Length: 500
Ligand SMILES: O=P(O)(O)OC[C@H]1O[C@H](OP(=O)(O)OP(=O)(O)O)[C@H](O)[C@@H]1O
Ligand SMILES: NC(=O)CC[C@H](N)C(=O)O
Ligand SMILES: [Mg+2]
Image 1 (tube, rainbow, N blue to C red):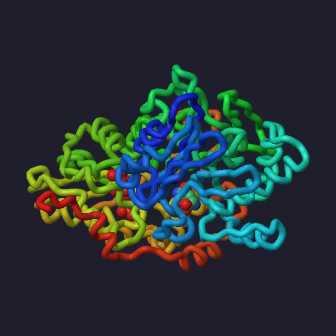
Image 2 (cartoon, protein in one colour):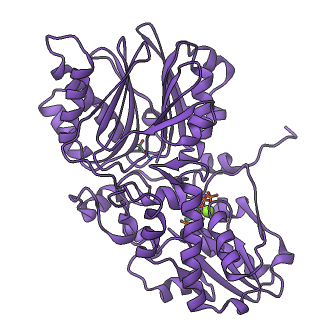
Image 3 (cartoon, rainbow, N blue to C red):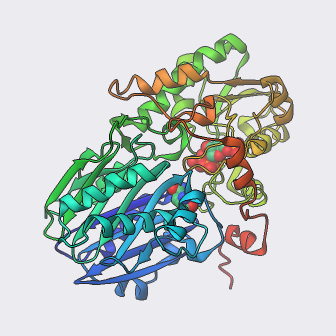
């Protein structure tokens, strides 16, 4: 779940792209990049790190032009530590194309060989996004052979792409001399929306918060399978390019990934989390009587809306018991278990008085590897809690995710092949209460009846694209270069040393 953005304007866009990427930082902390287009020349700067670290003034000055795109990366394919896999990706022919991608191709391996043997195209990294760019380049070349590239040719290329690509993809790309192309996979797994500002700038972005926070008015979501082409004058053309599109957004966006102030596919992320708190209340009542809970404490950050609603419905005081160090990033999207574990303690600290002698119900949005829960439960006990109960606003995460969330192998999931009682024992809490899968789908789905369903594969093992061999994917991903604790990790987590 990287964050992507693209703009067509008639004023310089470097600062605008930077601002939008900052608003999408929660979607990817590993690398960031921007490309701008001035006349027919691309200007690019990308590197590993967060937006504020990657772009210095001199880099920003070197990004001229009134059209551009950007990305913040959370790696789900290839090598998380490879600077070369930071996005955007560039290819020189045809026309000159740059591309940013949110999602994960499940047939990247097969496509890479096909690109080489049939299309005679070379890819130089392990990134699925580079594969995607080369498929786009090949299809654009085919569609515009002997004719000028107009929207009809661009849409013909996207139609062919949908036939070749499998998995999830929300994409923004720039075609030099022509315009900006954005499209979404036929299931709409990853989000993409567009908006406009008063001066006529058109922006496409992963989440509505990027539009609104940078002075644009949300216009609409890009439909599953749809392609939008914005020419260099700012005219918007669009076409449905998939044969049988359905809207099945990733449910984990609502549970954890997206910002609560975003509205994705017509659903307020905040309201979705409140609703999850409401249905969770029913589960809690049937496990632990509310009069045996003294206080409800959220595990910051993402669980707050669900915990508030839960506390309200149970009539139990809601208190802040953990303070988050805002300078440590999101732990779940950090690459590598060592670094994730260490950062939970660096990130959260207890307010001991909220725990001492009390029966506390801790609430998290989800439990994935159990890294956070294990640490937190122990911290609550160390602070003097009498009983420590834990509730998760999402059901157990039991299956690998193959569509752009970094939980690729089942063995790393604390709930895989374990009963709730076994998980409770591992985490070390006195009671463990999970959301129910159908209740979760109803709680969020009721907010937009036009949805066809969700990709909830990590909870129910049903993969919307229907062609997933999780064993093969687990094997492939298990061999991915993963990051375990290195010096670089540790220094990245360390707080700035002001005495230097
Ligand atoms: O079981 P785990 O593998 O630990 O993963 C789940 C935890 O990770 C996320 O928090 P994170 O710190 O990433 O972000 P947040 O501040 O938005 O809650 C999520 O909200 C859970 O707290
Ligand atoms: N989280 C994502 O969307 C990742 C995009 C792409 N698969 C990468 O690893 O760079
Ligand atoms: Mg969290």
